[in-house]
Length: 118
Image 1 (cartoon, rainbow, N blue to C red):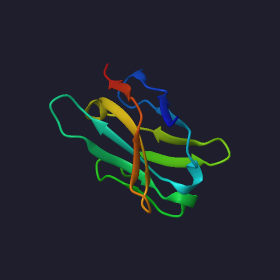
Image 2 (image 1 turned 60 degrees about the vertical axis):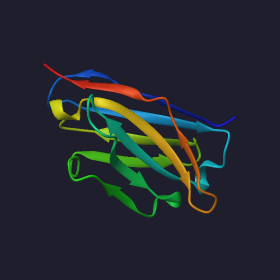
Image 3 (image 1 turned 30 degrees about the horizontal axis):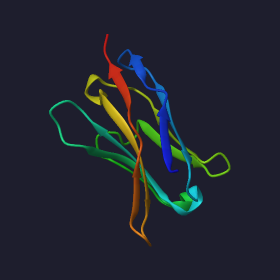
Image 4 (image 1 turned 90 degrees about the vertical axis):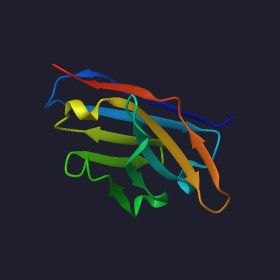
């Protein structure tokens, strides 16, 4: 059974930091490209960051460049999103996504809420 379980969300003040985790199971994690998306109320889902299988290429959305860092630990089947200098506009539900280009397999987590507010 494929599972992606996000954790680490919560309420943080502007300028603060959070680290999200996404624990994967039920598939060969190291073969998959991983992505973090977010969706704020009334807005479309937005790609935040992506990392390829093997961690060779990492990309970030323009709104988070220089503040967020994505990484993966294939030994733990886990991907992380370190979020620094958080802003109120970062408030959203953050989703973990796994994608295997060769077969077009595409999996989603249930999401974790991040709220940035004073």
